[in-house]
Structure formats: C-alpha cells, structure tokens
Length: 145
Image (cartoon, rainbow, N blue to C red; front, top):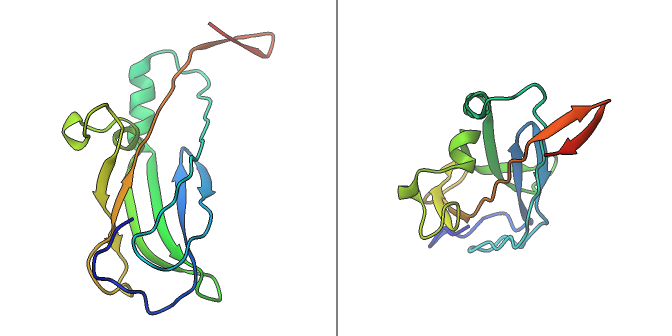
C-alpha cells in the first residue's frame, strides 16, 4: 500500500482485513510507515452446493461483496483508515483493462480514505488467483470430477 507524502500521526501498527465469500482473514501487522508491505497469501475456499450452471455462480458472485480495510491498532478497538469495496465477481475476475500482463496479476486500486485519515487515498497493489473445480456428491462425500 502506497500513500506518497503521508505520515501517520499515530505510530501503532497496521494490518489489512479482508472479507471475501463470507469469510474474514487479516494480515500480520506492519509498522506505521508508508509504503506498507504485506507479503502474504490469504486463502479463501468456498463450496457452492446445488450450483450446476457456471452462470448461476457468476450471479452469486455479483451479489457478494468483497471488503478490504486498512486498520491501525489504535485503542480501544482499532481505527479504519481506508477501505476498498467491490462485488466479488469483479474482484476475482477483473476486466482485462485493469490488469497488467496476465489476468489477475498486479492490480492497483485506490482505497477510499476514512474521514479521520489525512492525505491522499492509499493505493493498494495486489493480485488474485481463482480456481474453480467441479465435484459430485455421492453418499455425502465429495468426489472431484
């Protein structure tokens, strides 16, 4: 996360919280100095029962929302400095014009800064990879086709 020229008043560490497909994860904390480097892979897995048509899966992903928040550990509960929100379909499968090179690699988006965050909006650089597999349910056990 870059934010040229911005120095944070509070010196407590920061982390990135990620909410995708109804699941929440967060990164390790980093020092409160831009640029922020989160060199982590977060894995989210979701099983969609009763989905046969890929078009139905696309519709479900369009109605789901992915939220990323930059949070500083300011007591008592932490302070949200900036957020990024997008429907999960576009987050996982961005338009080709939003990517450089291969699909999903090195995307850059501007986060929306909170009212308490001074300075320009932080720029978030990240990549996503998505794997979709089919399975059959036989006697309550999942078998990959």
